[in-house]
Amino acid sequence: MEETITNRMWSLRSVIMSDKRKSRAVLLLLSSSLLCVILLSFSQVAHALDPNEIAVIANSQEREGVELARFYMKQRHIPKENLLILKTAVKEDIPRHFYEDEIADPIRKFIEDKPTITCLLLFYGLPLRIDWHLLPMEKSDQKQEKLNARQRDPVASVDSELSLVRIANPPVHDWLENPYFVQFQKHKTRYEKGQVLMVSRLDGPDPATVKRVIMDSLTAEKKGLTGTAYFDARWPKPEADKTLSGYALYDNAIHMAAKVSEPVLPVVLNEEESLFQEGDAPNAALYCGWYSLARYRDAFEWQQGAVAYHIASAECRTLKKKGSQVWCKRLLEDGVAATIGPVGEPYVQGFPFPQIFFGLLLDGDFSLVEAYYLSLPFISWKMVLIGDPLYQPFRQRGVLP
Image 1 (tube, one colour):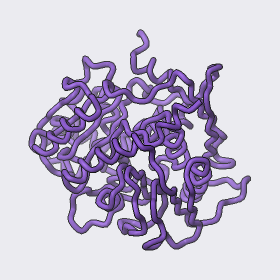
Image 2 (cartoon, rainbow, N blue to C red):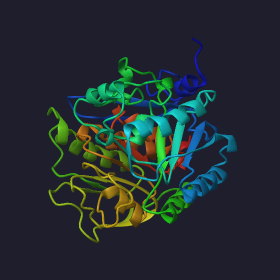
Image 3 (cartoon, rainbow, N blue to C red):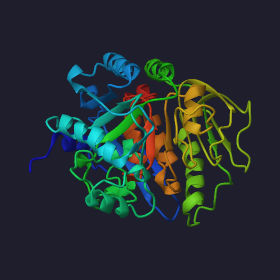
């Protein structure tokens, strides 16, 4: 089979390269013993995600979502023919069979003759979470068998499942290895890069928040994101030769994200058990921390275009429920332009590695959605990226010699 345009595009962005035109390198250490040092080399010919490669998806049942989709497409010069308006319920949770019939199938048909599409962008009004428990008893035995195949947890995010939408009848497992993740590029994964789509969403508590996210991203991209990077570890950095896993691995990753950020922004690293408190984080441009479950800490004064996420379970369980203190919802309400979170328990290894995500974003060559997929271990699982997939807050650094 001939190499697809998608594969050719990604070959230019390969994270392991021997090309003589290497322009910069970022050493991102996942842990001192469990994982190796990964060299991320970016060729001068590499380019970020192109607007033509994005399919925009909106729900006809949510008029404001459709309007926002068209507004965004105009701002980002995305071709009109890249818009799909499907019809599904305006609810955050959706049963698996409705997801397949009303979301996955229409998208699969829409992009089947569009090989250049590499990214899906979901808009306000589309469901967020797939739950097997909502499957009616009268559905077929075949779908019941698929239900039983989900070994540990019936919940998945719509976004993460759509990564495999090009594949007819994809398997339903706990999770699948993401072929874009830098650590998995050394061995064969079940699906190759060209088979997997990147997925982001522009969503939030209300349409005004979504429009603000779009405009903040455009403005910050032009000016360049400035401010302070805040990282909230819980323990001091471990010894260099200590084997790490689980919480310790990700706590160390937060330490390393702080180190990666130092050449670009002022950094504040908290390595105490207590989290940042009110007033501790003025002019916040970047943030990553853990573990305050569904209890947002209002410690931040966010810069326009800020990117932030909190490592804790189900912090994207809802974006709409009034009074909810989950981090994704509250971060958007307070002013961030991009955030990440799970719709259910992802286990800590389900989160993108902070030092890779922020390292790529700070480098300037890669867009928000690309930095996310290169740092994300698993797909067909729980995680959601909220933000403009084309957003490059440090783009000016990417064109430096």
